[in-house]
Amino acid sequence: MKPIDTQSTEVLGSAEVAELLRQAIDRGDLVPKQRLVEADLALEYGSSRGNVRAALSQLSVEGLVERIQNRGARVRAVSVEEAVEITEVRSALEALCARKAAERITDPDVDELRGLAQRMERAVQAGDRRSYSEGNQRLHAKIIQISGQGTAAAMIDRLRSQAVRYQFRLSAQPGRSLVSLPEHLAIIDAVCTHSPDAAAEAMRRHLESVAAAIRASEA
Image 1: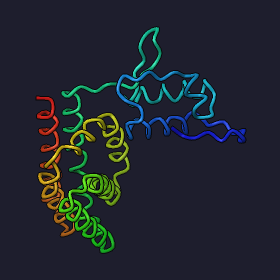
Image 2 (image 1 turned 180 degrees about the vertical axis):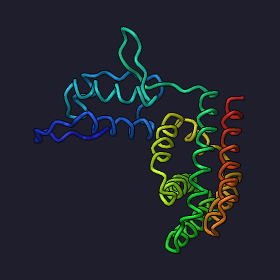
Image 3 (image 1 turned 180 degrees about the horizontal axis):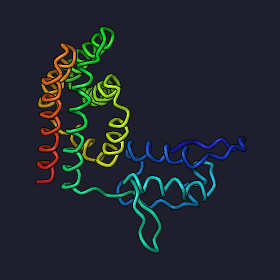
Image 4 (image 1 turned 135 degrees about the horizontal axis):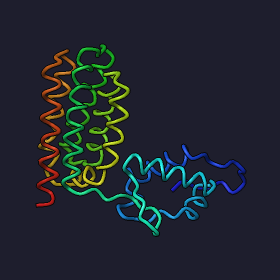
């Protein structure tokens, strides 16, 4: 949670509170079905109950929070079936981004992606799951950024946040990185060599693999 400066008189707005709550959900600080009490959050974040209420309403629209009649709000729990569906939608959007990235990529971007590939390979060799997971996130974010697809980026970010619990679970699975690393390297190679069709296909195959792993995790 965000530390509060007791000397400050600034009151956070609803958009700022919503962003802090998104980050807390992404990190796992707020877990599925955890109650979100307006008075507690207002004190925690140094905001008003009205701003917290507006923030929770926004997150409800985004699918991160759900309101229970006569019981207030809580972090929404996503089922395995829904997490798979979210990943399949992400697959279509991120394949588009990979295609556009392959068309738009510059030499400095190529250098950055190639360097990221090397760091991810070293992380797998060292058994450093945390570094590999961070590299995974940076890779997807970089490709989306290169693509210049702002609308898709916003939709992907919202979808990813909804299924973040399953992403953390997969990243902690022994051996998962040995499966996903070749997939990530294929994406990087296709984007860096300006191969739009291959980039889109590599991204689609990768996220299909993620969806299959989510299904298997609950078997």
